[in-house]
Image (cartoon, rainbow, N blue to C red; front, side, top):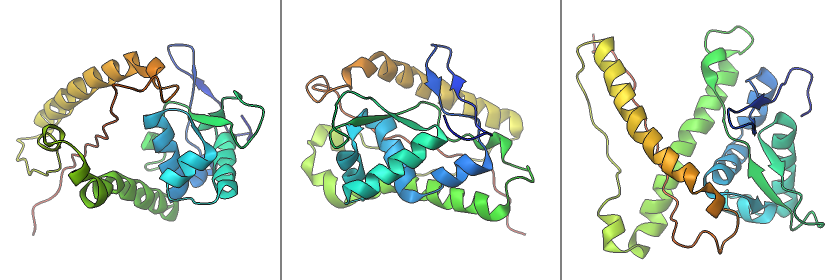
Length: 213
């Protein structure tokens, strides 16, 4: 880990995870290509720079390596050191991600920095859906297509207690499927081990809004 203001956290399993958020590492990750690469590594497992770069729209391998090294310095990815050649070296994402709790209302984070991060993150939420709708849908069997969820819904809740109930119910459901995925994480190391597994991107948003005046 580099940077005087960064400290690597350790998960309950004893593995390194992403550091506490700082203005400097948020600036590193508030970049469309870097966040896309980090998200892909987190969801699909270790990849070479050229592969994860191409999947994130970074066509030049040297540019992909620059992004990976910037994220390594910030504490979000690391090389596996499983190959002597940098060209064939695979990279993996550290678990955790960017947690904004410390940034909201903190004067160290200016509005422009938070807006830049919000722009990058919100764009990432739709990128996989756009890819599915534009390039992928017709390539999948009907049984997969029939169960894809791309929808939105307005809810009318009686207050913050119902919001908490809704929040906790969604978390319980998602955490069960995350647990199943973690139990299979040792199968994501190589292409041969991934046989029988299909990555599914799930994103959830629920925000309260005000009635029009």
